Length: 106
Image (cartoon, rainbow, N blue to C red):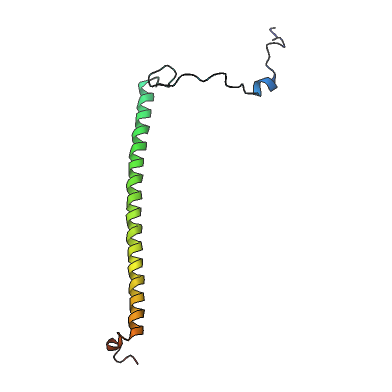
């Protein structure tokens, strides 16, 4: 039977303690061995499909955001016009300018 010696077994406390950063490596550039590269065509195709999906989705979200902004501006303008018209009617009524239109409303 092969029984490992106590020196080869890592102590749980030592294994859980993270080591400090010894040094910072060089900057990663595309094509360097440290940068992830797809291992197969299928993996590359999956990455490209995901990239295309996310690009289309972000473009769609941008377009929807612009439409929501436009509709909010239109709604705000309509509410402002309605408020101004109601205020104008109250002012005109107070000034007596609507008397000719109130025939038979007494």
